[in-house]
Image (spheres, rainbow, N blue to C red):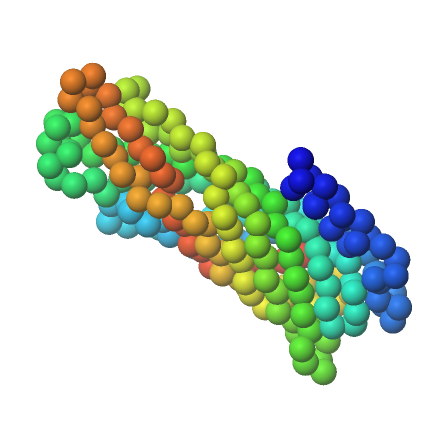
Length: 209
């Protein structure tokens, strides 16, 4: 309950007129972004963790000054299917067959901070931090599915093409862990405890609406 009260208080501060940029034409703005790039998952077999990734997001931004803004970004991105990097001794208990995991499409919500440190106001940097909801499914009926709330971080730079279009490049990391695939030979079941860490480099376009 305390967290809800804190989030509500931050939202009130975020939207309070006294914090708006008096020199900005639009203190509060809305938009959406689309990004495409390459992603890599840790703890997977060979190059299985490397794939193309796309991300769509809806965002709002509140300009506190001509060089600093805060905002909120909510997005969704595609998942991937890959083979887990499991020790050979564990694979032998499974008959030697590799184990595949499906990381389903992920949704996230991030708090954003944008700064324009140069005289050229078209160039800016940004940092995003928040949480992602992730789901994973193993291709074995005897293995548990897994859902996790994971920390997420994004950082990048952008270039304003005009008043409504922005080009940006960013690095993303969704924190996870080693799946730690364990087999119980007595019950003939297995278990994973983590979804692998994911890293990506994305090139995107944002449109102000």
